Image (cartoon, rainbow, N blue to C red; front, side):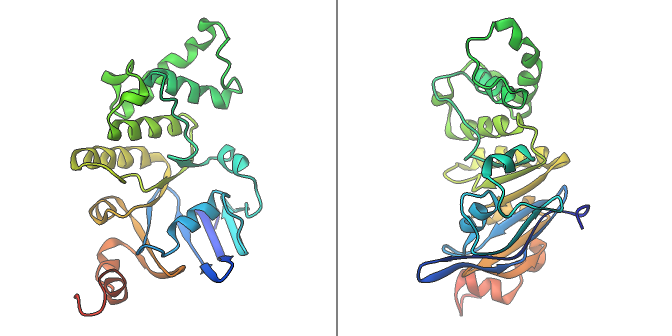
Length: 251
């Protein structure tokens, strides 16, 4: 099973005082796929993400990554193992340039993170890779711009670049299109498609046109349980899903 599925949950459950936020969720994410987690507000999507990346401890069940039980593994160890949550773990320093941000992210795997006092020549090996990542996310013309002054969509692109610097095997994207205009949505959707070519992406996303366009598999949550799963064409026609989103009598 470790070969086909990079991430699995088995009866994953999270109880808070007074209610069950996630109830016996069995999620299987196929390697080298884009898998979307969707559902109405309060469905438990963010709680599942927080359980997977160890920001929350499960009340019950198991989480397996590459066949290994990571249910009780610490967040930093999860990131080092290749599963990285973008827009949370990726640090963007607002007063540094785009290039400086990417170079700092590249230093992490080398164990020289934040050694600002090192001679400039010792970081020269990172220049080529930094330029490559900046080009990959479409920020070449912004390479010397101060990160805090970038337009919103470009900041998100920089966050993806700093996440890619960690060489993740699996990226978890938490609402990557939130707050974006149409032009930025198209650009970031294209970027996600490109970066997913040789890695796995699991994303929580509210924009259904993006989900339809990008996802190989969609898991629909409702009240903390899996309501439906499959490709968009099947899930979007599922009467239970239509009712969950639209309410009875709205087609």
